[in-house]
Structures are given as structure tokens and as C-alpha cells.
Amino acid sequence: MKNTAALSGQRPAAGPVVGVPASAADVSTRERVTQLLLERGATTAVQLGDALGLSPAAIRRHLDAMLADGDVVAREQAVRAHRGRGRPAKVFVLTDAARGRCGTHHYDNMATAALRWIARTGGPQAVEAFAAEQVAALERRCRAAMEGAGEDPLARAEALAGALTAEGYAANASTIASGGQLCQHHCPVAHVAAEFPQLCEVETSVISRLVGTHVQRLATIAHGDGVCTTHIPGQPGRVPSGKTVSTVRTDR
Image (cartoon, rainbow, N blue to C red; front, side, top):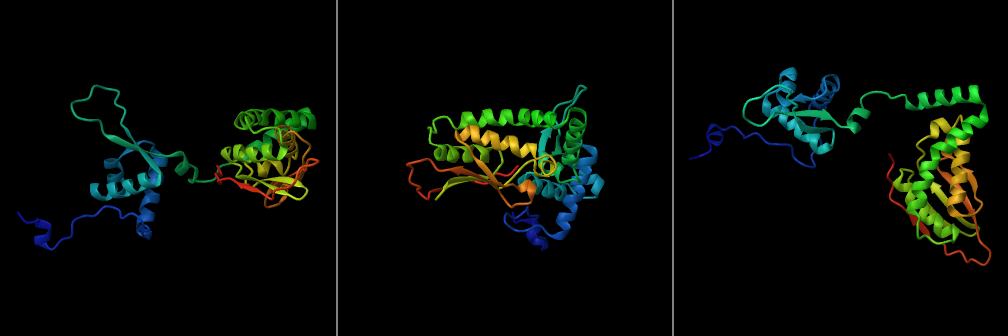
């Protein structure tokens, strides 16, 4: 039997084509889907289609694209009362990444306000103690990741760059004529550290302990520099290799 769509001259419905950018209309519709999911929480495809005036096939096309982009996830609908036969309906919810793009978040403002309160009530020493406690867990994780790096400070800096990158700092280490340097291309607390340099100071102390020698901070993102750069003095009798160890950028 011949395809009835072909006989009628109609083209069969097609799913999203991988690699083809979404049209402006598609983008607009997906923004409306995102807004509905933000307002309603877990919602079925039928409910979304009804709210937007879209056919089941149309809303499925948009949801499939959003699933592929990592903007939504599908889950089985929770049913509290006794239900009949058949599989439970699936509901769609926004992922954390998609939710994070839906408006402005004020985490930096809240963190800054909290540190201002600590400074008013406890003084600069209280801010420094708070900062030290915050980076203590990071230091423990990095130290564990650097196990087996040896005693050489530059080799340890290379291992530390990898550990920091895994934490979202996008770091790399390099050997230079005067020793070595550790660069961090991303700072999760840059806006807060701009007002409270204690955050940078305790981080520098952590780097010093982890590489096993005195280090000097040359630049910080918090103070307007493009990269946080830490100098690691060369060790007597060590010949610089000129080696650069780059790590994959994984900003969070």
C-alpha cells in the first residue's frame, strides 16, 4: 500500500535535524516552554501543548530538542492515588543549568553581605578565619589529588593545576626562567574577593602549602587582572625545562 501522505502531496512530519540551528520561532517557543516549566514545575507534554496551543507532535519536537540540549529531563509522573493500567505519564522539568539562565541570581551579593556582617561583628580576623575554613576542604581535595606528585615544587604545581581545574579554576602550570608559575583562568569568588582580599590571601597560603615552598601572587582576577598568577621561585640547582602543562578548561 502506498504512503497516503505521498499520495496527498503532503510531506511527513520530520523531527529536529541535528546540526541545524533552531529558527527564531522555535527559540521563542522553547523560551515559552521554559517559562511554563519554571512557573509550574513538573508538567506533561499534553499540558504544555494545551497551554501553548501546540499539537502533540509539535510540542514533542520542541521537548526532544530541549532534552538533547540538556535543558529539560523527563521523569515518571508521581501518582499518589491508585491508578489504572498502563505506564504513568512522563513529566518534564528544567535542569539546573536551564533554571540558572532564567533570571538573575544574587549569590555574590548575599555572600558579600554576609562577609560584611562578619567584618562588622568580628573584625578582619573573623573574615580571615571564615575564608580559611572555606578553603580547607578544597585544600584537602587537592592534596589527595596530588598524591604521588613528588617533592619538587614545580612538579607539584603541575599536579595542583590539574586538581584546581577539576574544581573549576581552569588552571595551568608552566616553567619559566625564574622558576615556575601557576595560572588560574577562572575564579568562582572574584566579585566577593574584590572587596575581601582575605579570600585571595588564604588561597595563596593554600597554594604555598600544597607546592611545598614560598610563593608570590603576581595578579588576581579579583583586582581586575585577566588571570590569577602565582609565581613559584626556582630551586637551587634545578635547570628550567620550559615545559608548560595545560589543563582542560572546566569553568563551573
